[in-house]
Amino acid sequence: MSNKTTNNRAWWLVAPVVMLVAFNALIPLMTVVNYSVQETFGDNVFFWEGVRWFEEVLHSGRFHASLLRQLSFTGIILLIEIPLGVAIALTMPKKGVWVSVCLVLMALPLLIPWNVVGAMWNIFALPEIGLLGKMINGLGIDYNFTRQPLAAWFTTILMDVWHWTSLVTLLAYAGLCSIPEAYYQAARIDGASRWAVFRFIQLPKMKRVLTIAILLRFMDSFMIYTEPFVLTGGGPGNSTTFLSIDLVKIALGQFDLGPAAAMSLIYFLIILVLSWIFYTLMMRNEEQ
Amino acid sequence: MKHVKWLPPTLYILFLLLPIYWLVTMSFKTTNEILGGFSLWPQEFTLRNYVTIFTDRSWYVGYLNSITYVTINTLISVTVALPAAYAFSRYRFLGDKHLFFWLLTNRMAPPAVFALPFFQLYSAVGLFDTPIAVALAHALFNVPLAVWILEGFMSGVPKELDETAFVDGYSFWRFFIKIFLPTIAAGIGVAMFFCFMFSWVELLLAKTLTSVDAKPIAAIMTKTASTSGYELGLLAAAGTLTIIPGAFVIWFVRNNIAKGFALGRV
Image (cartoon, rainbow over all chains, first blue to last red; front, top):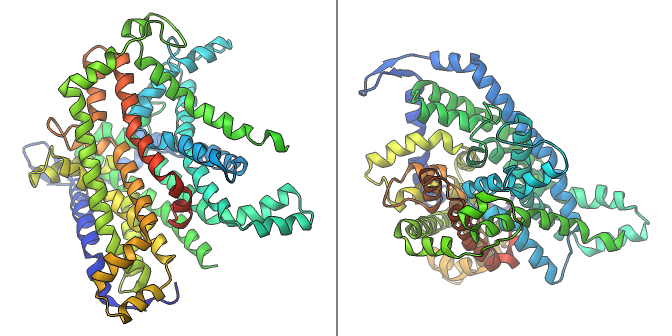
């Protein structure tokens, strides 16, 4: 970091990226801002509304409910996926043919299109014809995710754990692989316990990759749309309607552009602020 | 303790494979068998679902469309990200830190927020329903990611390499293409893998930006599933086929992926 030379001509090198991303980000963002302060009755006639939509969204019970569901979902999956991913990475083989096999099989869910993930879990969990649904009902538990909110939540969370834990595992595994063998030898000589090895050698070495894992999982789970939409359609009722699903319902379903745009901006801002906190913490870690 | 160490990864992988097994099994069943009752494996094994997909143009064209825009996206994203990542890893320039964070914020933008404005933007410039529109739209989140990964790899290359080349009289671009790029080949591979991955799995934007000619396979699946009375066998076969390109790509980068994760920061 320290031996970088100051050179403002480096801007020429970043110019293509800036132009491409600006085209994609700034113009649509301006469109959203534009809608968020106006009311339209169609025919391209717009009326100035000021901050009315923002006030409306911030005070609407519907938005609060979606936000609460979103926060609970993100919180639960982070609490499951991060420890589980680390635990599996710790038990993975360090070398040999099985490493490649493990890595390839574990990465498989990451490369399945999101709607296929949803559709796959749908037919997997259906109570009558799905393997999972049949198994749970066979245990004597009444389970039907299309009718019971609790079962819908359970299925959605299980699906997300299935889909994304591997990302945490791969990252944690990469962090573990960067630890020199000498560290473990030293620990063995000192007679360190398994816990001490984890706490004072493995965890510090994984700190950076784990911050990235948490950041990525936070951002992506906060934006989740396709998988729960295909799996449950946001139901039963509104029980699994997360922020993105609600937003698409308002914007494309009801075509309420003003409220949808205001909600978009608030939504984006929440992710931005939370990610900024993560990012700052991460950068501080790196400087240490 | 030592001899049960293989147990957690094995159980985890079994858990990962179970839904995939179910999908593949379904794809070899007839719709009647699926709806008729429960069976662990196909009773009357059929390839009809796959034959339909490979012979019906409205089906297989979806795969071609998806692969087209994913390829264009991967090439565009990595090409523009390379010089930018070099700039971030080697130079300090006006606003560099802010620019880097601004780029990353685009990785945080929910596609649901951008769906409608993207539709209007790409309709206005006449790219709607082309693979290029989807490829450019996916660049929104793939370019920042590619810059991030490549910057990590490039920072791992000692600066002396550049200085020696310049002393030897290499021009910037000749050094960059002839010497620097081969040095970070693994990083380019990892960046391409991630661009491929996120473009291949995304559906919301791909569906919003296409209607007939450039429709991705994922969108064709959702439509057919609802109009033709839920043909689960066909849906399962189409789903199974979407796993294959991904599996192929992972196999291709399997040796670089762990290293790439560590060095490339993602």
